[in-house]
Amino acid sequence: MASLRGIQQPDLSKKLYKLIKAENHAIAAYETAGREQASIASQLSDWGEATNDDAVSEISDKLGVLLAEIAEQEDTFAQNLEDSRGVLKQIRNTESSVQPSRDHKAKISDEIQKLKYKEPSSTKIVTLEQELVRAEAQSLVAEAQLTNITRQKFKEAYDLHLAAVIERAEKQASLARHARGLVNLLDDTPIVPGDAHRPFQEAEAAREILNRAEDDLRRWEPRLDPIRSSAGAIGSGGMPGTLSTAGGSVASEQDVHPVLRRESPVRSQAGGEVVQQPPYPVHENTEGEVHARRANVETTAGY
Amino acid sequence: MASLRGIQQPDLSKKLYKLIKAENHAIAAYETAGREQASIASQLSDWGEATNDDAVSEISDKLGVLLAEIAEQEDTFAQNLEDSRGVLKQIRNTESSVQPSRDHKAKISDEIQKLKYKEPSSTKIVTLEQELVRAEAQSLVAEAQLTNITRQKFKEAYDLHLAAVIERAEKQASLARHARGLVNLLDDTPIVPGDAHRPFQEAEAAREILNRAEDDLRRWEPRLDPIRSSAGAIGSGGMPGTLSTAGGSVASEQDVHPVLRRESPVRSQAGGEVVQQPPYPVHENTEGEVHARRANVETTAGY
Image (cartoon, rainbow over all chains, first blue to last red; front, side, top):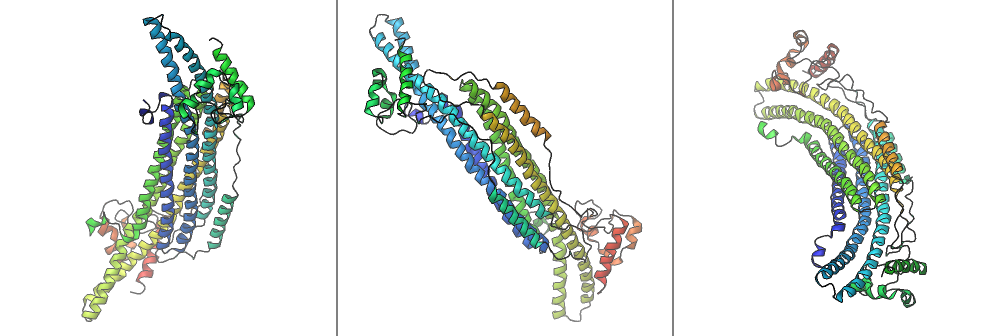
């Protein structure tokens, strides 16, 4: 089981696992688009030079600069999507880590049912029922962590994602508007054979458009309705305030209910190691422990 | 030579040929990005449903709708780039068709030079010099067509391209701004184990955001500085007004200088067939013939 877990995603995180994979393909596509567009921009400038038409040469060169900036934005966009994707991974990791506690609870329940049927007088039933209460406590914490992390990181991920869409959009629209001004400098009045177009006199105007476009790009700032978060007090353990772990202070550990202290899944799963997203709350503040203890009390109330 | 021409592009159109090919890769990348993003949008909705969290389910579903619209814009963008690319092909085709007239002129010049060196008294020189004058006339027309088509189609292609950038940008920015409002409806205040989030009460607000987003999308209209074109009078032959072809009236053909009439490359290359971009002007209006004749007079002036 343990070795398979790395390959096969637990059910709980399967959907997000696939979504994150698809996001990777989308990001790669934007990177490709950006790369191709950058190459096209420089090809356009080369082509313009080869036409031996001063006006076309000048304008295609400057237009190439703006198209290259537009292409650059695709790449920045891809990077920002990657950041958003990284945040989604935190939800997926929490989902993965919560699965074992669900499985554990279900397994014990199952064993109790079987035993009650086969050996109704077995003393093992009592032990298992104790274990079930502990598993339920663990599970309650895990589910709270899951919903806390999910909501917080969901907002964070799509804050980044949507801000990236807006940034790319506004910068590219601004660049494209300037580029249209550039294209308008090209006189396309047709000539008759033997005639020539008058020499290009708009080189200065073209340069100015380019400067203004670059100024606007530099001056761009996000004007976004902020995504408000109330997750401020959330700890890395996914709790508003949480139990201490092996890394917490001894004093606070002593406050914890003995059952939870002995069976703490952080101890059993992560040992003394530092884990990025422990399935069990880590120490945040003393106020938090009150909440965690409260949960513990609730769980053991029926015991 | 003729069979190779389909495979190997003439020098003149080589750069644009490659650019158009690269544009195809960029378009394919945007199509991929759009497809992936659409798939991600529906996966997001599925994932949200599976969380068994009403708020996450509702918001991820509606967010999925907006992300799918954003994805749809990538696809529209790809289609618009394809249109722009089609216009660039018209320049490339003209470049390809102009190459033979350049080659022809160079070849005759070459033959004359060789003959003058080897057989200075050959009567063939006179014939070749007559042919050169005709080739020069043809070439002058071809070069005028090339510059006329290039400038007109360059403006047209980048009008479409840049309008497409702006359309995608404005629509996606609008959708993303609404989507941020949607994300903000999710309360991410952390809960303690055993507690539950209050039931989701913002379903109506979410639906309204979606409606407003779709209204805005429907109401969107391009606000663009128009790309001004002076190519209005340009004919399919790439001239402000042009010579008649085999398809023209007999009366106007009779006005054409006998040399041009006999050697008309439209006849020799296209025969009676209809060609999309004939290398020689087709009949547009009677005023045009005056220009074309003027060109002819200029070319034959030194004869």
